Image (cartoon, rainbow, N blue to C red; front, side, top):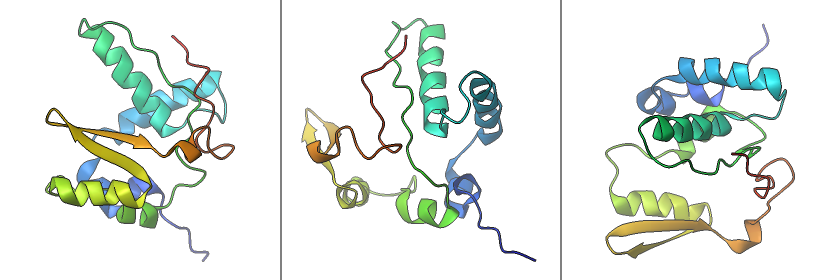
Length: 134
């Protein structure tokens, strides 16, 4: 029997944090019918959030499409890289800092941005965000 590594959404960490994975899978399958091998789970969540906001009466927001958050999906990576709901702000900021995300406080909010050297990113990972769809 060949060992098959668990995918990210089946990790113990995501099991405690991620709710509605089956709904995300259903939506992603529909999007994949129109855009095969292009739509990532993060795209699916971004589209769902944008549509939900409009349904609640908020103004339409540009959607970042074609953003591939990763070239792989491994449970072990999720377990090493996701914060828990009971983490302190310092623990979360350290996690982001280790990923080269810069965070600063302003007016009681945390603002985080990726380092400029990652803007545009590696092919197939960060994608070109200039082709936003409405």
